Length: 390
Image (cartoon, rainbow, N blue to C red):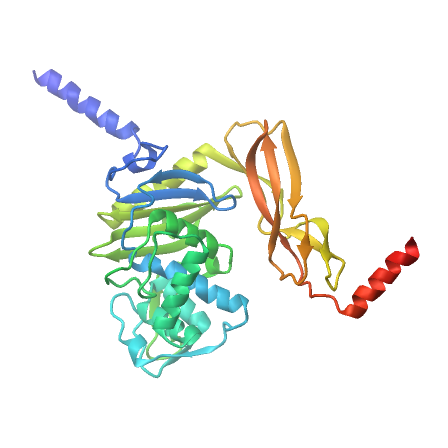
């Protein structure tokens, strides 16, 4: 009997050793209707293509805690891109911003820091006070900024998300899903500069003062997981332990989201397993760089007769390891009639890759330059030139 018990114990130990984490590998088709393993929901996507590699309860509406700041950061980087703000701008701290609880860098009313310093506080230390200060700086008030957050969520097609604040502090009617978190993380990663902040394990604020403040990254994976360089952790008693992580290996970047883990150790273990599986099973093949000109398109009544059409983001093929790339057919499809005025960045077509008649990759194509409506004199000269050549 003792020998049998010993045999069973050994067998159980071997099984536990070689069977992967339930959340990372079980039900990889990901259509589970109930919570699996120790997570409430999870998803993994490939960044360039946006293709889902794993999903589990990905549309379950849950509180995101500080992962909310992914959207806060997205709006900050959009404001930087549009020159609404700059990294050197001074941000004044209101009493309201300074009053935020939870994770903070203990900003004081009337204190000012640069946008660069505020980004370090948000990305590294998950500072709620810095998040609200930036919200007020960009939109005038926290309420107005939250309205922008929800507007951007709608624009990104996030149908299971609603924000009430820019911090993720507990409140009613503030929720998102693993799927929507992946969508907003992918949008944020279109601004690679964010990784300059999220990849730092430690930094300091108020250096050379008697109030020097040590920032330590809440995302420990950037120190322990090869290729990890972001993105945002989250925790409240209601949300439990959450993480939107990203890592890049051999030119392939993945985004993984887990929500509702019971402990930080379990959260990190599960998300590492999910990313391990993605990197072990898939590879990417670059086809075209971002902003690569693929065609010149005619613009009706534009101040320029033609405009360059470029890739919106890198054209990449996602393949299972060992999958053949033979028989690929590539084509460029552009809208038949482009009408001025056209704004730079307007999507007007797609770069399409087919295999055996099936579309396996599709990259948006956009207008490279602004095209204004031509003046009557420009149109007259163009018409006259056409007549003279005939």
